[in-house]
Image (cartoon, rainbow, N blue to C red):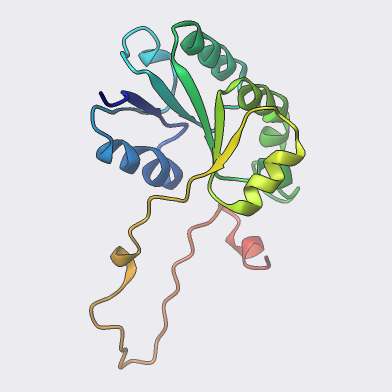
Length: 171
């Protein structure tokens, strides 16, 4: 009998699409819940909850509530939130949430990360939960043009980034 998962996104963004929504579409019996734990707490029949980037007291309480119902919690993170640069507009908010992020990660039955480097970062914080690498669910075929040759000589580069692309480009 397959495990019934619920995927709980932290936001409506690219991370949620690739790491929550798409995986939910290929898992038999899976539910997908948009950004918040609370609407699904009492109505889900899931055995496993994959929660994304929970970093608030409410997220911590939601994780505890799920576990009290016997739901195993996997906490997914795909950003190094400990290393957000000071010039980033989200720096202050992210730094303020780090203690709750660490509590949420430590409370989880397992942590999933997107890369080996991020696994090393999370391991440094000694949160106690086992950590596994789960790469993004990206079909790279979507990004291969049928005719890659360009006659105009113009090259276009797509760069999904923060609202500070002028600084991201320096990385």
